Image 1 (cartoon, rainbow, N blue to C red):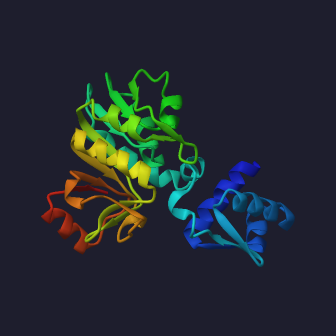
Image 2: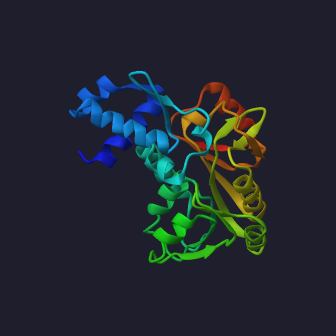
Length: 251
């Protein structure tokens, strides 16, 4: 197993269990404890975890706004599962606004069989990865946030307001019945608000860990969402509340 692949698995484990031990990881990956310590040191420098005596734990202080490269490596199977469920909502010729989330990125990777799509995005990663995809890609322009590979600020706001689209496809960091939809970064959150204003329909991609969670800044009330796509069946209380707000739920 390559070092990068091993570190990706460690990231998944620390997000799943909140804490990992050097000895356990050494046995699991059949490498020396010193090799695991070097892996943990690199992941600590990346802001993903904090090393502890004999292991490491999830870095709670940076978990809400991880770099895109890190987010893109976490729970890829769950993101792909959510993305697959969203495909039926998109038709040939649709116009979309897509945020820079790693789940939305997985969604776009599956749209190859759709024709004449127009994608408006502030994601640098999408601009790069889909340059030769056959989709009509429009950049928002704006100031670069290197950490999330996104474009934000007044220029991006002005661009987004020029277009009216069929669907906005977004993700978030938290969904709460009282606080609504919240996110971790204010500049990106502000741009998403512009996207929502310009879209006829809003599709929210959010895995089960986002439910009942409140992040740093408010994005929008839950009722603005037309369709919520997740990876597990929400609780009966959630399903009831979402139905009352006329939100379609796919899981």
